[in-house]
Length: 427
Ligand code: EPU
Image 1 (cartoon, rainbow, N blue to C red):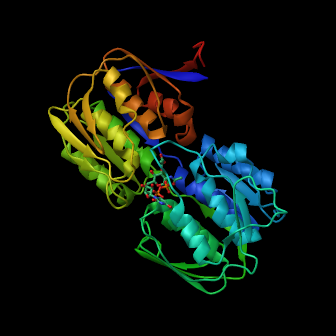
Image 2: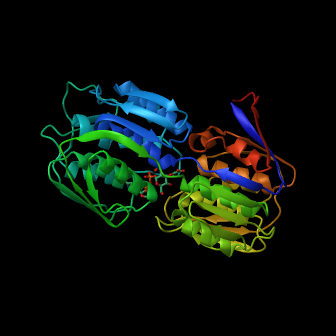
Image 3: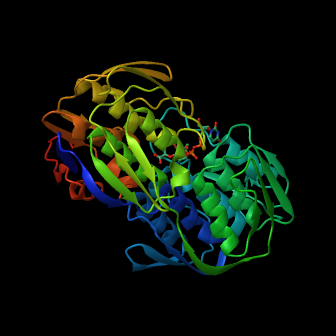
């Protein structure tokens, strides 16, 4: 076990290059199960969740080679298993994509309910609704030794209309995966529009799929017989970029965030400007200049293009040191304020009532805190960078799931942050 030790108060300046998008990578890698041929995927982030999804694919029979640190070659021609290993599936949320991808490929899928960060109940009923509409059934075959939910489409999947009752990133991508090789046309309505949904559709189209409308409210998928191999490069990670942008504002710094798509950052850039930071957009980079004082702002998280829930903890940390009171409302997840208790250990003055946090700006002091989840952990790092004295962050395995070399990237900007062994006896 390791922990991060941050000594706050340094003004962060310089350039940081953003890695490929986690939430695109963890969907595109299982999407390769649908491909008859070799996929080369570039700009893959070197993070724990990618390592886990790659090892699940290998257990299913795929051959995966790293051509370099960020480029993987995936050959799924020998995949014929449909049971995903429970011990790995439970480690990450995105393992639900194996259901759509395996149903598309083998017409059968046995996948346990996924794990991932705990934000209260995280149902996948909309994914299952989509699979059922396409003709998959919960299998009652006594011959099958089940390790999770088993879905089978003995006669193959057939295109249909699917209306999602809630705007869901995962359900949108999963139904799209299952429908790619289905017979006929599938129309999915009320879909999510996040940049990584467009990225997965672009990947599939580059391999021969016929998907239109990703990024709008309605996606149309004309099923094709098979997908061919090809090369595809993943988009930059919108949330990693946002985390460094907040760090610039939090430390009164000046950071050029490189390898971003500024359009994807609009809601974050606008909120940072409201806090008083200067945000300058270039073709594929954004410069954020903090002033040292932070104005309070109100935020409501929403599906894209609204303000992303995955940036909520980082902003709450920033606002904990603002000059006044801010109100942050979480409208995507039922329970995404667990990290607030940790922030309060650092002196933050925050009251959470249901899905709303009222944050009275104050000074933060270093102490020992833990990462309660991936983005909560990023919020702790932001708080540590602003705090007086030393902050120790434990349980950083959550951070490693989704941020590549976070401490090294911060150190290169002038932060005093180090990863050390966590020698706690209760580990
Ligand atoms: N929902 C349902 N039924 C479903 C699916 C979702 O009720 O079948 C509800 C959820 O409970 C939630 C809302 O719909 O209240 C949105 O959930 P969504 O399905 O969009 O979330 P997800 O696909 O499970 C992805 C990201 C999350 C990110 C959310 C929202 C991945 C692997 N995860 O989760 O990312 O918070 O979209 O943008 O793509 C993170 O990266 O830290 C992270 C948690």
